[in-house]
Image (cartoon, rainbow, N blue to C red; front, side, top):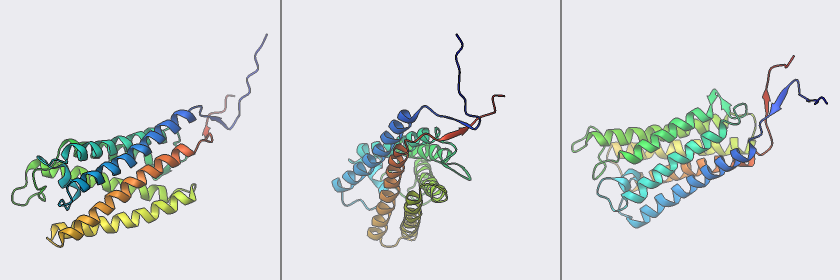
Length: 229
């Protein structure tokens, strides 16, 4: 008895939809949980103005906040793992998954290397090497998050996600830049802190929405394959 195998000359289908949906759902949910923990930390100590101060050495909020930051890094990597199963969909310039995995690694570093008490700006009086490492990793992580938003906004598919990414990109960019300038030039710390928390919340929520969108993309994607002949 011979077995007849029917092959498409154009593409095959990836049989990993459930795994993709699970990874993306867990990643998106982890991002929302991270945002909740960060706001819980802030409610715990409303006197803190800037995000990173919540995780500074000696702060009572440090364990919760740094766990939230590590959770955000894990969320970015989980969504990255899900996107690797859809390489022909989520690519704009280079794979969005590549941006997310480096972004997640930056947040993980920032969660482990915390800033010193008061979280001083690097290269200012009282700043330590750990402040430079933490701030660099955290800033790079959010810059890469903005890059990922720009990549998603450039995709040809998922029009609503493109629009949401573009709006979030502009909002995060403006609020974070203004907050950073206020911090550097010793401006209104309350306003600067509120802007920084707003930017962080929007960026983290975007990770959550992206993860759930990837999980919702349950239809198999075509994958080019060589002609069996």
